[in-house]
Image 1 (tube, one colour):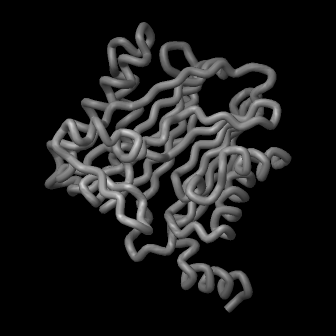
Image 2: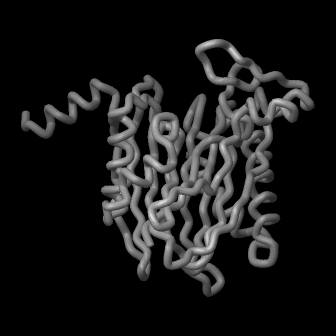
Image 3: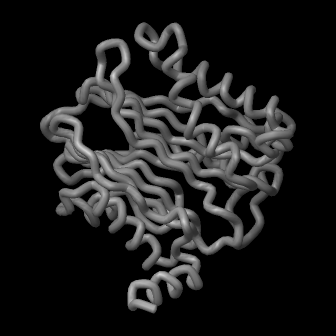
Length: 280
């Protein structure tokens, strides 16, 4: 057995990686490069994160499509979102005339389909953060849950998404008949179960959850250095600014994503972790 094989077995035993670790070769479109990396956490279940990181031509526009889907109680919902959510957004008739409306409608209709298919997809759910980069000039970010998008401009971090924490949306949850638990030593949870207030799926909790995304718009200018999309396995142990500082000097986006994940693991993050870096 080679030294590399021994190291790989040691990592598997430690729970830091599995058969779905990594594979995020950097790619370049014009002056924009993007790459991703992902690592299975220490849990006994299969990897539940899924990633989209690609450019495609749509109606004579170049669209960069980036997303992190962080599944829970099973990976089928996140896997479905990876394959279908952007297609559903792009099919909306208002996509070019009212993008916010198109994204919101697609999120809600996709969630409805997932609930209808719960026998096939399971009763689990998924958070999501999606980014649509239009002709390299405008970025539209939408999210439900606690996966996050962070932009670096001249080394200063700014969060582009909203963490949908149960404590922040307690009134809305209670107005739907639910409750938010606050057990000492644990995070607030919807009905004592889910640590996010918005998500796709989660049929047993859906009456108390929302699938409506928060949406933000950003202009890409000369000060924009890079954007990080990542699941909460990074943000549980690192601030936005710490993440930006950790990779600002790394030009290759795949290596930057890998470095962020390795730093999160060194800080004892035990969750599945996925990360995309888009560098301008």
